[in-house]
Image (cartoon, rainbow, N blue to C red; front, side):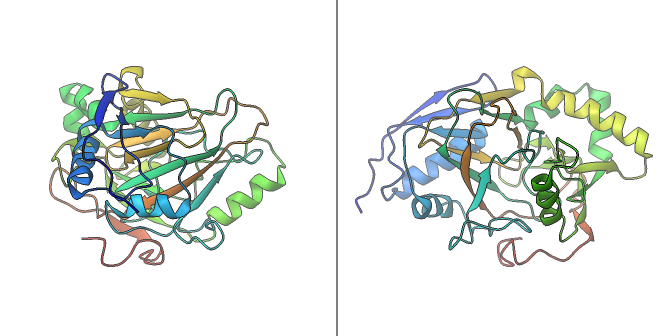
Length: 305
């Protein structure tokens, strides 16, 4: 395997989030200088897009590993056979994850970053939307920022972001049973301080179900208000997939969403995630587990600091 060239271009895709990386072959061994520049670009742009790569699982695993230790595929959902780090993202009927979410926030150490690679994409629809949660925090009026800084939210996988869309759907019911076969409840700060950039970002998404110290109705209302800033069009970018594309996004300062707008057409991606650390709030307080084990079968014990 030959090393890649150390020169590449960065082309912004959205005004506040997203950049396409041009001139890199991810199937080649990347020079450490290139990896450092990609890491820097990720901090700046939050989501990076690589067209026409046509990697296999081993290539994707190798690329993701450049950014840290890997998680296994998922805390409960089975991996691709023979590939314990690869999660199949397959749009079965009624089990599509068409809600805004940040990956696996129901455990104490959510992923640092995620890679998504397209295998089969529909001829229309099936895009992925990604939102900049740091920009959303910056958009908050001062009074709402001050409130968010003090709040903590309980995240749980008992509320599946890929809920069945049709009552009585057997496949969807089985998907939910597997997804919730182990239960976690974790208390995270609503505002997370990024461990590398120091930026503050809203740390919410579909697994955040209630705010500590508030009623269910109060929690719903405030979560809706904060989430509305995350999903403002100016804070989002939409990627139209082609076979062979790869996305790398910072799971600490983004949410993402896959609209269910492609009928019964097939759509298949593979996901590999980089292990993350314990989120820290504005006051320096770390996240804490409320229910469930340490999920060390998912996140390597040495990866979480």
